[in-house]
Image (cartoon, rainbow over the protein chains, first blue to last red):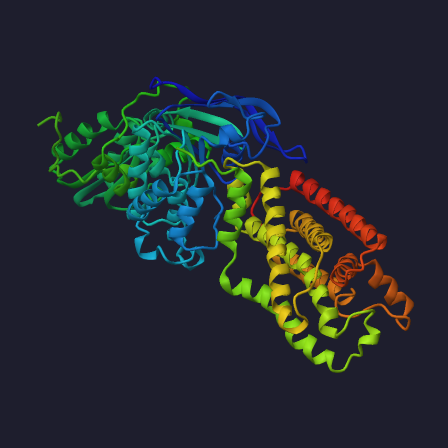
Length: 374
Length: 260
């Protein structure tokens, strides 16, 4: 099978409740072999409905979807035997964690020896060894979630659907699970993943589909989404001493002339106050930093710290859903190739998961930047 | 390599393995067994056998009743199992796997039958020291098993149909308890309908499906099966079919979302 093989495709897929209200409408997405596709959206955006329709739990009321070459309207057991589904709601059997794993594997027809070996692997991988003899209701919320993901991985599958699998997990567990999922995807498993943790989607997903009120708003790589919709980057500059009022006004005027809206300037609503720190947002940071450096040098001002945040998926998400502060600054959406560079190494994942928002460390400047006037 | 066991049997194994903790099994079988031992012994000393319609003692009268009651026990097991599966989203989880809804339902029915049959065996075993080994003909044995089995499907179907509609655990378990009490106390499990029974009560007792099962089982134990018993069994089968159809319809319409 080729690396770009499409394992899932929807065409104008929709689902309407009996009341006629649409939970999902005109959904056009695809999923490739070995790809991790994130589904983002506010509560009630249609993420879970999408998963349930694609796993044949709900019949679509309009459009079509092919999963592993089969129409979800008519596909049954043969299709579901090749899918893994971690539901949003807790699903538990009343036996011990270890027995649960083996029993679930048995239900899927996994031979006993394979099930036993795999259960040991999952207990270790998902750090459930210490609670292996406990019943699921005696587990913490995070342990239950880990258990649910572990249980689903007891059987073989071609596509794994994960509906908010990391809810309630601590950072360590989340990192471990995401790393494992990334490894499985590299091994050819296709994953559809819903989450509200945006930096997690940013870290893990090859592409992200954003849903709003059941409709697809955008589908692209996290990089492209951030670039298109991520809005301005936050710049935080602190001078060694407070700027007198004329200098504050001059600095702000300079920023304004370079496209920084004073509306985005923190503290800008308190004119006439001496200040030493300025926080603002701009999409043209590269041109701005040398000017700040030069302005400070020319006035014998020392910059004690300066940091620039990277565009975040959260910014893009909020922007797309009309919740951002700078909607007017964003351009239109579109699609892009799915092969944009993604963090694939454990180290990259680690860095990304431990630095939500990707805020760059403060830059020691002393009024100078690479490329800035001396 | 995959196991060759059919999906329905895999579900039955799972039903037994995942939902029957030893304590609840002991309670479910122990309660009717204790009824035979204690109630049978105590009432045998005060109830004259002439009022028991041919039974030699109250224990001999009670045992077939408790055997018939296994239809309720089996039905309750499946009904509760389904409810818990629904409550803990296992129904949805199972349906997202390589199983059909009909297989899940068939798994519940098979679980009911197996549990009821085991219950019949336990009741007979407990009764042996008190009434001796019943001399049952092959026809009697088949009649008892068919009666309890069909009755079990009736009660399981009823509870499953109920479980597909209700979204509250309190409502489900309240109705289930009431149905159990209603079925057992307004049936001929503990007492016969005699000439002195008030007409309204006699009408209710005689119309109770558990009474059909208890009367037929009793006749099988006594070796006095008649065409009335065949009719009882037929009515029970019709009721079981109706309850099962209600369960199937409920299943088809069931909303798989989380419930409380």
